[in-house]
Image (cartoon, rainbow, N blue to C red):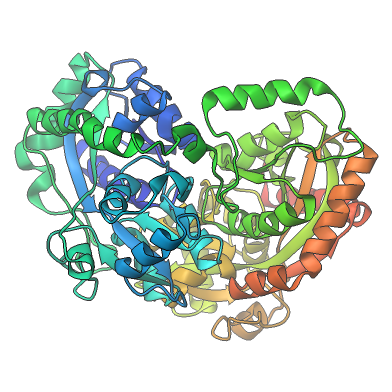
Length: 630
């Protein structure tokens, strides 16, 4: 069975849906495949499951939806769905970076009254939705000129929070539980929650009413739904609700013995979620109040997480951009319009974070907005295919990383000739991680256990298996005498969702870089057994090398580069290469990468091409030894 999540991986919508999926798998005895479809601010995901075959095998997440009609993006109403059950509700909260001078909502109000555009406010998802509408309503009451707010949409709260932690935005609006890891790691502060009372589990987070003298409340609810007129699904709803069987206990806690922080509101009957859906329809009045101040919906939808300049994210605008791409090869004064960078991974992981750091510098160097589009489906195959098939004019480029494993696993047949190498900007070592509750305390003990019963363990690949992080680890295991073909290798849409699975106990091990896991490591949710680097990695003194752990040095990991489709004009490639070189030499880029614990490694286009060819040769050798593709 398939569950569609209308947000990117790593945020609250994704996390709560995956917890629900695990419970449903146990109760119904069938596997559930969670698919993230955040494109067009969730419209793609909602359209997928509301138009699916009404047989109960494709369901999806329902959440406040009235904004889509007001924005002209879609015409969803309560009649568009078959409601099954509500499973979560959370109030909106206001978050800032740990070192932010903003201490309260009153500080934010004062600054915005003086200059409404002075703060970059991430909506934690699509704008004019669950998190920002209540906050904008508050600002209106406080006399802020909402027309001039610098509202920035994101591919879910995880992406917005990564931007906040790295200095890309000033404020993020989302729930309290979504910020747990970064808050516990000391990188983000929650300054207020939009609830009439303080939220259980967060005694130190004040209510907005305590700070501005008037109570405000608002937030989101999440439920499970299917296509309309859903006979079999409606009957299946009885099994899912199970007359209380699923609700015998709450959703599992994030850490053993610790309560889940946040709302767990189950609807007792189908009518309960129908009521919530109808309430969603009624919220149009509140949304219209916000819209009446002429917060241009399309302007909001056009803002990017790269600083708030106008970019079109609507479906119509995407089509217009596609037509614009037909204009032919780039002109001498490239770039004349915004540039799109496709990231073949989910929001929140290393590929996403490093690309966004680079994009912030490129925006200033090139003088044009940069749009980041996450396409992590198929373990990254979808995103790489989009880069390969883009118009070779320089306006759609993307993140390249070790890709040769796809060919051996039969997922795709990428090679260096499919792309135009532009420049490399990052390099990091792979590592093997476990959850905080794992019985394995060191690499040697873990490898001995895997060697004795390889089929008993699940290893998350942090993307498509046979790729950047798992191949070096698999090679190390092979040299240790382990039957790697018997291990259950689990593909995913990037490191962020895999790390959530690891912390929750869904897998036994994960292959990823240390920077990608740093937030959860700092929060005590995951631990590194070893890093595949000849030398200790700066910033991670507690991560032993394989030499220190098992006596054998292993060197393996990733490189990340900017590339485009084959056949790009030479002058455009040269300009982009020069821009990446300048970006990687800038103090801001180095500081941001160091703060996030990512390595800086620049290679020009020629050097990158040589690296790609060498990667293909080395990967083919390892994959053949492991039996992939046979």
